[in-house]
Image 1 (cartoon, helix red, strand yellow):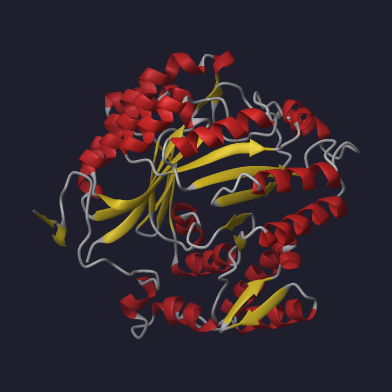
Image 2: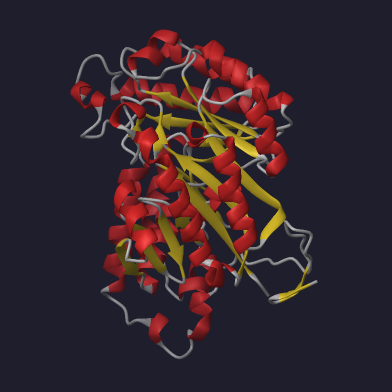
Length: 428
């Protein structure tokens, strides 16, 4: 049976660098536009070099992130997607997402993306308050966001996601409530609700510990308000920061949280394949030059041990409302979680966790404390490991330690290009 993989393409360019952004990207003012063509040629070549590796997979998600992918134009985005179609096996029903910013793409280009196979957009709205948008360096208004949203609908997109942020400078409960309600009123299929992170090296770092930022208590109120209000609007929380109408959860992001495989292309892109994590150089000029010359672009690689993967199971799946299962944990890693369960029972008493249908998950209050709680659980897991032998290395564990429980495969699947999957690497 064919394995499935997600593809991430990093587009490290944008019109303007947002004041809170810590992702690798080059704004127009720093010459980003001049590097687009060399980047484009390099990423196309890079994908071609991966043809043999991609041949062993079915691609069921593709995600173009940035930066602002729409900044490089629809033609280049379509060209990269075509390269993936030509060198890999993209399922017809694959989720293909592009991030766009309001005002950064025309209605005609949206229609071109939709025709080429893009079927999901993630629109960076961030706030419905224009003053707040200006403060954080956004170059659009909420009216621009509404226009882009409506243009996407007219272009045929029926799977739209909207990003919003709480905890912004001078933001209060009232302006946040307005943002939640107005964005919910757009009737997108998916809403991502992020807490502001003050990162060193960003313009907003000057606000660190500033009274202009909402207090921790106010931010907690903002988060809990969003959880409750979005539920009323029909958006079910499925991850700490993500809410969706039934059936519209982000398939690509779920790969990260469920520990599934994904391959990244572009400067700074990360991958997880065959229990190995690796990333490429975070410099677009170096990336383009090294790819063109056939030289090494790998910046970091790490072979994950079974125990490390077990830790990521706890850390990542507890980000989701699906949570974790003692039986599932043991079946995958052949490890017990007695010490972790002791903590979960204590968290349950405090209203931070709940047990239902054989699975443990955090409550909204638990999600607010998740960094601390998960840290305690990882410490408990390590403590338990030091007191027992290593059953994942015994003969009884065998290959089962490498299996996942999210490995359902189609008997036959349609691919771009008109091919039908019959068996492993057999096409007609």
